[in-house]
Amino acid sequence: MAKSNLTTLCYIERDGKYLMMHRTKKEGDINRDKWVGVGGHFEPDESPEECLWREVREETGLTLTAHVLRGIVTFLSDRWPTEYMFLYTAEATGEPGLCDEGTLEWVEKPAVYTLPIWEGDKIFFRLLETREGFFSLKLRYEGDRLAEAALDGETLPVS
Image (cartoon, rainbow, N blue to C red; front, top):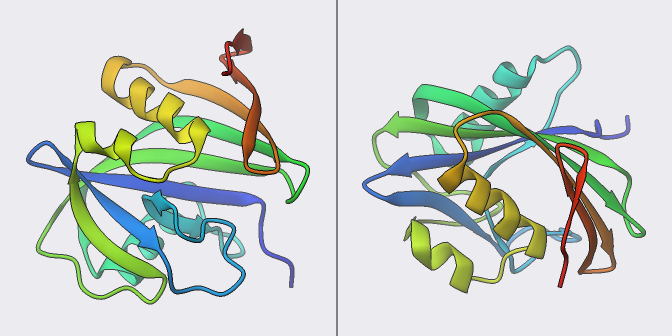
């Protein structure tokens, strides 16, 4: 069965840090060597919250104590199918365990921009910092290069 084009991504927050995953362990991973949050593809009949809770539990061993749906990110690419990602921030108790997809590490929020992350991720990190309300972000990639971005239907400048 083909993977769903619906996904979740969660940035667990604690003490001014995000829990980040350095994706190094999965073969054929489009995120290989990048730093991302935790999440993944919906299973059949899951709601976004069910996917969120399951993926966080599977990848970190943590149980969320609070979560907020911050936005939807639409990814277009000339290399992979369109993906619709439900983007969350959350809180959890305990310490993360080992992950079979990469290394988990608490990263100071300002330091996230210095890591190897997708160019479009920098846009939604700024939105997580500065925007209270829900947003819709569309990111179009040509290879690894961000070619186009739009926030709530309005075109954004792309370098």
